[in-house]
Amino acid sequence: MRIAVLYGRMSENISKDEQDGLVQVESVSQALIDLHHDPVPVGFSLNIQETLKNIVNINPSLIFNLVESIDGQGRLIHLAPAILDAMNIVYTGAGTDAIYTTSNKILAKQMLRAARIPTPFFMTPEKARHRKSPLCSPSIIKSVWEHGSIGIGYDSVVFPKTHDQLLQEMDRRKGRLGGACFAEAFIEGREFNLSLLTKNSNGNPQVLPPAEIRFENYPKDKHKIVDYKAKWESESFEYQHTVRSFDFPEHDKPLLNKIDKIARECWKLFNLKGYARVDFRVDDSGNPWVLEVNTNPCIAPDSGFVAAADKADLTFTQIVERILHEPMAQIAEQIHADSDALSWKIAVNA
Image (tube, rainbow, N blue to C red; front, side, top):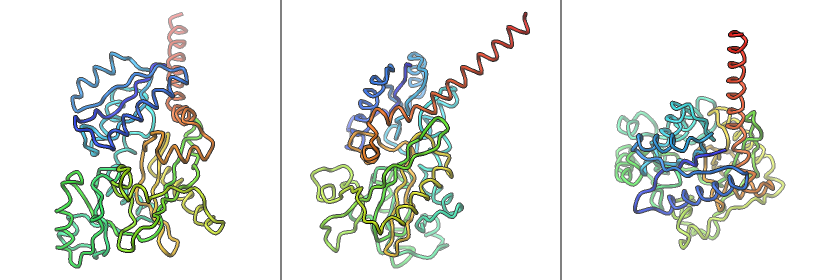
């Protein structure tokens, strides 16, 4: 099959997290070649007309959707699948609704709470302004839309004493957080990532081996968070002292079973497809809290998702093959339906 590998077109001053996006394009393209497909990279930008023209000219059988942001804006990530839906083109990964509801962290948290899935208490600037909710201290200030720890740093954890003070802290940081932010109760404790990969064309997920992010030799006055430096700046203390581990003592088994169950509930709640990652904090009492649900997470070779797949004895090419299961089954159904329709027309005309 000819497969268009769709990605968000990069800015001229490409950041380290954007560089990772280009690595994904190259790695996925090579895996598709290994699977005897014909990959064609296509950049997606706000020049929608140009993007549509490029896709039409390529005439792909399906799209491998790697779009994480458009023109550097995470809030626009859902435009890619929405347009592909309108064009009736099959694509990999989560659908438009799932991408939108999980990318908007406030909406995602509202859905999690409605489903009784534990997620930390949060406060929007509007609630702080009207003092509608009790204050949480400490809180961590996050972007509503951006992922990859964009805008998160050592000063993101705050200890507000009043709603006005919290509002000022959010207002001071919103520029580097994509223009919209919120405050979330900061959970002291452990951090886990659970990656999920579709098992077959029916869309049932396999939960890959759980990973814990361990904060090694962190000073007592330094908050244990996976900030931008920890994810992207390899020379930093944060990067070198946040270590991914897949090894757990036997007494962690009940906790691992619990977060496995919650990850599956998130998959079902948001109607996820292809692959996903659920991020957790676990408090000192052993209670897990869902921080984020990530659709189409990074699958660069050095990513956490690929590391978890490796622990499950899956190669990178096998990951890509599994992600292709559902869209290829969808194409087969369309071909079968078109064939039935043609047979019916022939019978009627005869």
